[in-house]
Structures are given as structure tokens and as C-alpha cells.
Length: 148
Image (cartoon, rainbow, N blue to C red; front, side, top):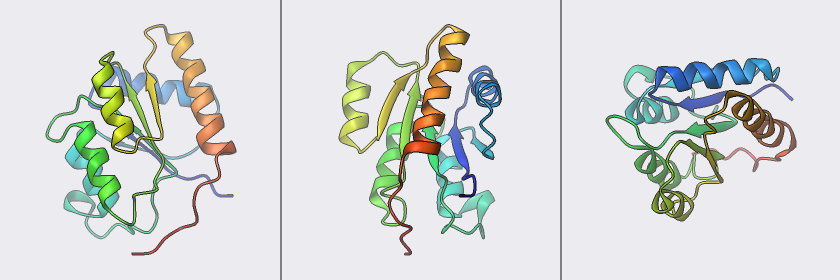
């Protein structure tokens, strides 16, 4: 199977670099598209704005979604993903430093597939990314592709 794209939605440059480093360190070779705010993530997913004309039939294999984002926050990004019939089954993993129980409840209520708190320790973070990659990129069997 061809390696699918990982959409990383992260506005913090340090967390972005850490996540990319952890993916490389775990030998995850999937292309990573980075969106630095919620609006950019939605433009990529739905082929609008700077991503107008992108083949929206080619959805990412998984979305790693931060919650605290500029322009459109992560929960609203998730809400819009789940409201669109092309993307509603897209695996979305909330990857956040938020410790708010309300964020976790709302994330699951809106259809997040998983909620992972970013560990502060780099070695723990590398292990968390390894496990995410193993599950979402290798073990998980996604639903069949659905056309609009």
C-alpha cells in the first residue's frame, strides 16, 4: 500500500519540529503536510484557498490536530471535517497539550478517533508518535474511499 499523507495541524513551530523529528526518528516515511492554522487545514482538506484545485479525493491517511489554533480552532476544524460527507470518516487524532477535560469530551463528542496529550519529555513524545504511527499508518484499516 502506498504511504498516505499525514496532515499535521500545528501552529507552534517547536511542536511542529518536534513532531516531524519524532516521525523521522521512528522511520515513518509518509509525506507530512503541515497546516499552521485551522483555516489552512480546511483549505487543504477541501481544496479551497491556497489549495484550490487539489484533488480532494486524495484525503490524508490521518490528521494530527492541535486544538489551540489561530483563525479556526481545532474543535471547529473537527466539526467541519465531520460535517462533510467526503471527510467524515477521515481518522482524526487530537494531539494537544491541553489538559482540559472539557476539550477531551468535546473532541470525542465531535467525532475524534483518538485524543493524545503531548508528553513534555521528548523520549516520551517519540514513543507516543511511534505508537500513533504504528496504529494509524500500519494496523488501522480505513473505511473504503467514498466519492462526493
